[in-house]
Image (cartoon, rainbow, N blue to C red; front, side, top):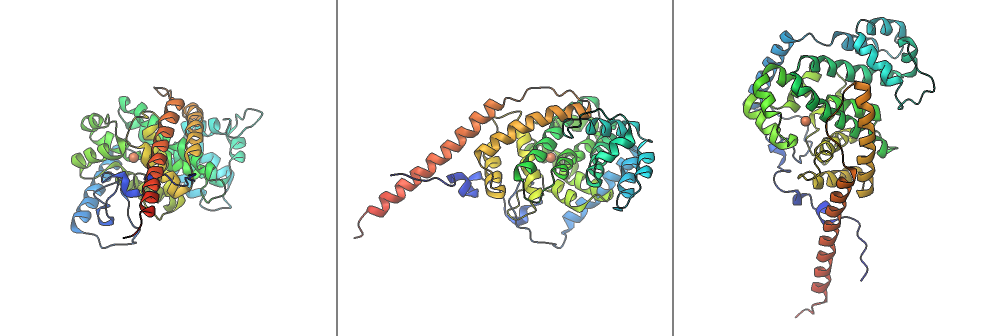
Length: 369
Ligand SMILES: [Fe+2]
């Protein structure tokens, strides 16, 4: 018998992910990585109201500790108008040499493929469209501002995860090709998704640095953050971005980078995929390979070969982004190991499906009494 396998068993049945990955819709606020319906606005419960208030108080403390990223936010304001004045933006950017240098490094990276080096900021700005300019300023300005106040031992850990997410999100958006996800927007979403961790590390340094070593970011870290603060870094990132009046599509993607939503904007799925890639790419033996395959397949119609391509491209992109941000990341990505584990898991799921089909066929040949 020849069987054409179109969808592995574990991908066909989301319940196979197990209870740690799924919960019912009304458990959304208690379980970050959950499948839930987008049921629109809901009445806020007293516990949620209290959580929001303590989150606001937390961010007020952050405001006192840290000046807000003035230049980045001012550029965002200036470029809100599609007919913005480039000279005005250049003058504003010159007030922040680190931000200007990051933009120059970006324009000179292989991503833009320019033959000659660009050393002049005004010249560099002409290569960035309005959208790319806004997103670069947003990413570099916000992350650099918050990183500068975070404890040193936390820096590399943060960059490793954020650059991985940013690279994975951009490469995933490129794989989607004709669908409505802009690769630069996806990159920005990945890069700033965990800003909340930086905020937490600055306000409760000792306690947070201790829990930030938690290798399981998606479930265990979030759990420990809630025990410590009463809320988690995803909520902090989202609230911080709302305060800064960042684009709603970005706020939404960041707010859902741990959440499985069956029906959602493609950018939200891309953000979740980038989070899962960040889990598996540095430590392939972890519980997230299966959810990653499942989200890619079911939500983005990307199969096992796309996953391998995504891992390879992400590795290349991380190397390039590390140069742009001027950080040397520790560790090595073993693409072959990731591929081996991913294909093994896929094969096992396919065999499970074949065996289910054989049972079904045997059952169907039993004569009815
Ligand atoms: Fe996160």
